[in-house]
Length: 460
Image 1 (cartoon, rainbow, N blue to C red):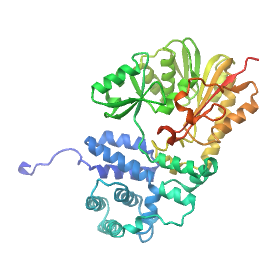
Image 2: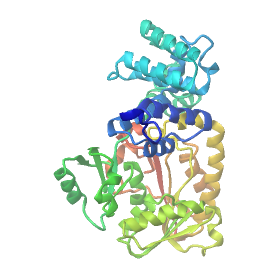
Image 3: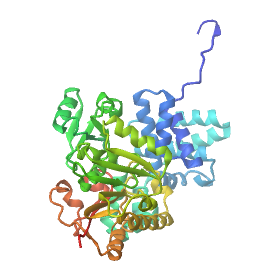
Image 4: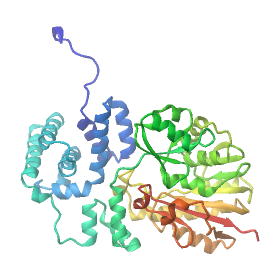
């Protein structure tokens, strides 16, 4: 630079430095990995390749946390738990690259980690980081799991899940299925979009995507879905801005299909934000009729309204309040369809939110199950005789799913399961149980784990 002039503005951070800051935020402040990642990437002004590396490092390191700590404890003298949180995050991130990533040279991993340690800490820390990582490279035999582990310990370490959760899934699903769930939770999630059929058809949008050079195929799970295997961020396209598509997981698309509203109906969506399923119902109804979209949180009202506006839907009316108090606001037996997409533990979406596996507890499952029971009991009285109530969650936890429906039907003899599903779920037969209720596990279709039950109020 001429005359020793300095450039203005903050120093451009490297991809690994951005990733370290996010990981430290998750560890120290309990930040959500997906929210912290999105916020940091918007601020960091990285190239698309570097943004991809940050995403890989944050999600991969978070997902593999207990396995990385298991290996690090063989090299860190007092154990990883005794380290400062940011140092522990740095070592985990570096170990993740050494153990799980092939494309990054080991010397580059060590060099970058030492530089980051020097920048954030003192010479003693950078020396320790250098020593630990070089020892890992010298003694690769210590980066293998022993052969004498129990099934719970082996699955928990091989696929990096907490032991209490693995033990619970083995009891509920058997060892083979429990391991398949854990394995699927570490796969990268697919990018899928829902076609707004009030504006275009799936066939037409697929043709347009292929003409733009995208690798896109129709979803086998939902008749409204497209899987985009390569093609960048779909939320930045004119198709998204003009309302022709929404970004949504395939399993989630099945919920509105299960509600099956028809034009002219009055529909209640009890816990609607951010509004994806609400909007899908509006599209299926051809924007004719009325949907009351309720949510507990006032700040989420705008999310629902923005979705409806972008998609050109006028049938959606947003209201704010506790879903348990909806019977105080609307007459009994007044809705043709009710969707209770209930608050849940979220254990079906670990692939998208890898920190969930570490932040949830058995107490969380029990507490949320009590709330689900209350909401089901309260809103069911708002359904007309002959109408459909759909109960859905993005969890694979039987206590929150089939257990809720069995209890509800026992307490409400005027309701029954809709066991003849016809073509509603023809593409997902593997997930149907003997009652015609859908429990998708993450490995079934490489989509989110989801539960969907259709209940009908009897006419008598």
